[in-house]
Each structure stands twice: as C-alpha cells, then as structure tokens.
Image (cartoon, rainbow, N blue to C red; front, top):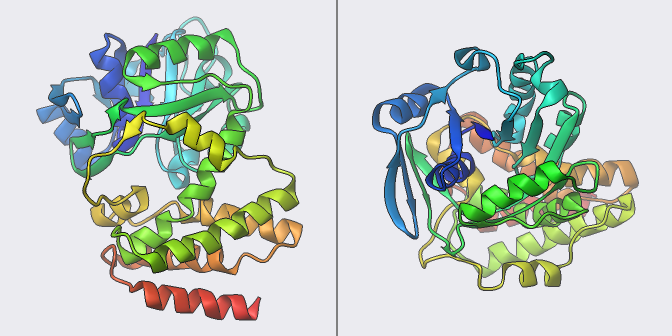
Length: 333
C-alpha cells in the first residue's frame, strides 16, 4: 500500500514519517512555505527516538501523481474547516483501471471532531474514522515533533458507519509496525465523540495560553458538562473517562514542559482559522437541535474564531476575562 497524507502538518507528518521509517511508501500533500521546506530540506521529524530527516515525495494536488494506484490509502489530516476542499480535490482523482478515488479508495479521517466523516461519506464510498491521541507540534515549515513514549501515539480505527473490515485491519497492522497502537474497533465514532469532549478545551488554551491554571480547568469542566448533556440528549454514545484512561495508561507519556495544542499552534502559525466551529461548535449545534443550553461552548467557539480572524497572538486573553464572558452568556441562557 502507498499512503497519501493529505495535510502533512503535526499529525499527518508524524504518521507519514513513522510509516516511512517502517518501510511503507508515503506521499506528503502540502502547500506554501511548508511544501517548499519539505521539498528542499525534507521532513525534519523528531520523536522520542531522536531527530531524523525524511525525504519523501511532496505534492500539492493529485495531478502531480498522475493516475492514483488501486492500492493507495488516503489519510485526511487537514483541519476540518479545510476538509471539503480536500475531499473534492482528491475524490475526483482518477484511479488506474477505472473509477475515481471517491469510488474506489479507502479514506481515513484522522482529525479532531466528528464532522469530517459525515462530509466524507457524502463523497467517498469507503470512509474510516481515526481517533487520534498523538500530541505533536508543528510551528515551523518542514519541522514537526512528537515526543511521547513508549508509543508515538494511539490511533483507534474503524469504519465511519460502524464495524470493521480486512482493509482497516491491514492498515492498523502497518501503523502498529510504525510505532503506534492502532486498535481496530467496531465503534470508532464512540471513541471520537469522547475525544471531542477533551478537545473542548482547545479554545481555552488558544485564547488564554497553554499554562495550567485552576480557573482554566474549571471553565473546561463547564464546557465538558455541556458537551456530555448535549450528547446524551442527542442519544450519542461516547467512551467513558475510565475507558480512555485505561486505553492510554502508560502508553503515551509526554515529557515535561508546556506545549500548545492544535488550535494554539494554528494561531501561532497565523493560519487565519481554527477548528472551533467543529469542536465547541459541534456541541452548540447538538444543543440547539436537542434543547440543551451550551453558552460556555458558544463563547469559546466565538472567542477562538475572533483570535483567528483578527490575527491575535495565542494566549492574549486572560482566563478571568474569558470566564466573565462565559458567565454573562450563561446568565442569558
């Protein structure tokens, strides 16, 4: 199999680099300064095993590869706000022997949130979800680090519509050889909805900084309570805290030091957008559909988007000010 990593950022580059190290064929998809750095200097990937440079094929679009191969696997790792453009571009690509990628090739959604699978299923026939536990940092073009031990990350895999098959089992085996734990599960979206609850704090970290603070933990707890209430009202199951703790215990230990998560990194790179509409916004959507008040998540979604649109530096807001906005919204709800 050849793995085409659509969005070679923190997650995509780490998975792609590790797969390449294990002997798999990998193509990175990237744009702009990042693509230029990857082509010129290679992917400079640092894991707990040390720093390596991977010189891999880099493309911006399918046309640069010609016809795709029947054994290609598409791994979607762009942020959800960029998913539609990527799905449309790669879904229409022709595959050798006839048909398009959307008709013939497996697509894995390795992203935060739960919306990309729904977007993909409108276009692709073979869609798989990936619940990503893989702390990684991408702040400089061509440079990515993922320092967890003893595993680089944990990637739960399964069919987006539920169930498993031989294809995803084979992909899971490749990922296991590349330094990940890759459980193939019948209910991958249950795991992704649990991960969504943890990602509700991304907006807090992006706007107020990654440093630990009891006030930040308190605001996150309020957001998670809203999230759990919205999921329950919608009849959506999620893995329990105990299940997640057991799955991770002793497997993905991070070295000491404060790091910003994916939304913080997006602001630090000045990308102009964050995932908040598909993290906190997912809870807001469910709340509005099912009659659950979600004022804290709506404030977090709005604040993170303002930071992205206006180019504000990550961490420029105080947690006291953010909490006050949440309190005001809750009083109006």
